[in-house]
Length: 267
Image 1 (cartoon, rainbow, N blue to C red):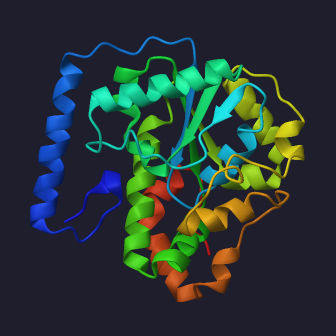
Image 2 (image 1 turned 90 degrees about the horizontal axis):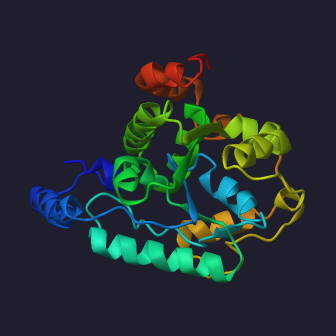
């Protein structure tokens, strides 16, 4: 069984049931909870893993008006925490932003692509930036980490299908990984304009990031080093991982969603 929002596959039936019981229990208070009022603007960066979410978060958090959270919190993942707990954390983030002289808080958790509706109920003053990436490069990157091609294909499909549902909302901006790596300044200017901020050269100039300032584990330790490098074009890496037959198989699976995202199905 699969729990999409937690990116967990082959879940035992007992754990599957336990998750949805917990999710229902944690959702109950939302029917009686009022939205959180705050002058702080919240930015959530989400999307399929290995699609550039960390890179974008690292660069935008260099902006003088943004307080970046230096880890993936998963605080808003459906069913994981109660509304009371979520609001308490958001209040703390808002407080730290205010005492730091920041007007925005930025948090990056890829799985929060499933949390959009919950965020609208809890936190009216928010914006989402959704990262998308061509399927072959994204899936090959996932594959190097998970070593299960079917899991990686399913994850790309599930997460990007969710991204498609969000792309027409006024408070959502979709950014292609290829645009960010091919034309970083123009893309970051578009992102800051969407956030109502003025672009600053320090966004790209600094090699430091929020991920250098707090201990990272496992995959994020790798990302910490990667996002400290200058941004360069980075497409076609899938050719070092998959042969042409595998690539055609992947494209046959993802084509309906890939085409809607603007990616063709040619190897």
